[in-house]
Image (cartoon, rainbow, N blue to C red):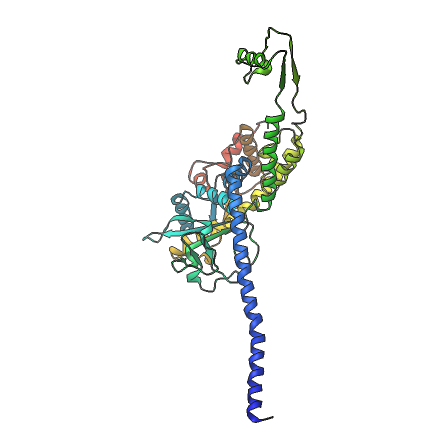
Length: 422
């Protein structure tokens, strides 16, 4: 073989090897982009469907509202020995109207699966606003492991929903510290969360069709039909209709009709199976299974045994505890720690705990039980500070500082309850 032929074959072989090694990489890259676009489209479609369910179905809307209300209730207490950090946290809660903010956050995030909150900071280096951005217009710029390669370009927002994996030229960028991304039912290494009713979208369509069919069937087949037989010519029939025009209206089923010729009125009853809607009820139950709020606490609980209903309430309270842990990690702690950093306090140096109030409107029986419990704790020798902490959890708009600074005396409280029959 000639020298130049050998050289030519050498480069030709290398070129072929390069092509065979690069081609799969290009294909893999294209497939990755395709899968990403497909996932984005599916996510947008699910969010739009869940929003439609929220807007059109009162059961779905009530589930979101109840869950958000019950999680937040009377808010939370920041427990820490650092008095400065505690004061800063209290001011932040008041400045942001934290309870309403958190209730809206739970409701909107559980509906959409994600909430993007821009932290607005004043010239005094205080968080003065938490601005929620449109869910479908904000993207998380993380890598395949859901980590930020560039913290200064962690999120971007477009003017409208953007279907390309690459951000538009006029995209608005946010640093990692500027945006709090709350994710509902988030799976590790995924960029986004999952709406609460995402698994119920198919059941919702069946419920919608089933309830429409029931309404149409009731309207068409449920009414009582009266067949009027008139002996005579067509003109006689028309004359009969005109003479009884008032009685042939919507109340014809309960109105006596008269004719001056021999005739008859045949009554045909409507469909007697209209009340059989077990299939629709099944689809409703399937749809509401996706909710963290038991269906019987929203509707359809009239025939439920009281003991079973009580068990469902206990299970629901456990679910609420998990929801408060989610809310603490996703929004409350990030907000507090950013605020402390703005005041020169390193969060890692603060030992703090978020304690959620379980306070709700107390009945006289509830107050009696609380008073009995506190007095028993005192008689058992429990520390006064612990008793005050317990009391603050159940008394709405009352925290430990109020109990500490006022005339609240645990000894006097226990003394006054002696001899009281519970």
